[in-house]
Length: 277
Image 1 (tube, helix red, strand yellow):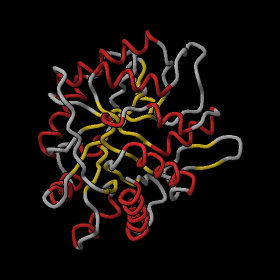
Image 2: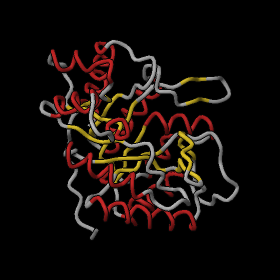
Image 3: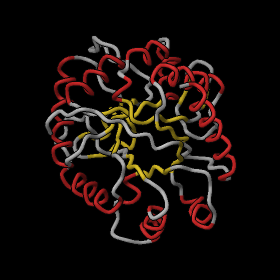
């Protein structure tokens, strides 16, 4: 892909599409501007998932969010996976496609976890090349999300925010900024989350994730099974004041509450997002 100007759309405030809420979404009119789908859940030949997906996409804008691209792996890019992803995108016609800045596979085996990368020039060049290949194949920019982390590498010689920014600018991709993950990693690795946010180029940030986590005292695990905490709300407000209005969603992947609970959180995000920019 050739580098072009960035025109950042604003979709509003959304939720992750979860099976627990299919019927309530389709039978009512919840105040949600758009939905994010987990790409791998819909990379299937047919069935209930695609039936509901087709109905939801008739009513709401959608974005696709993946967990298995393994953009940082030393394994070859998975061509079958990318073909299935492209086929799903042709069906969904998403506003954009995202995945994580991490590796998930080794030797052809999926770890089913988002593993961190060493932040150095060798890894940087490797990931930039792979991002360019994926974008050329899909015919569009992708968004890369900062994953939460619990370990660091001795081989790292730059910060995560420097690494992410360099990839976005040199591969000409976009950023899904997970504010909760910045908070989690900042706590685990003892850095100021605001320093991270200050460094990230606002024009590259197309989407924000907000989620809850599990605080174990000495460390935090990004579980997506709790409400957003006050400190993350404060960090979100800081982010919007720095970057302006950004498409935002609430993530919940476990202990799924009633839709009304998520709508209340989403309304809080909307209020902060609209009054802080």
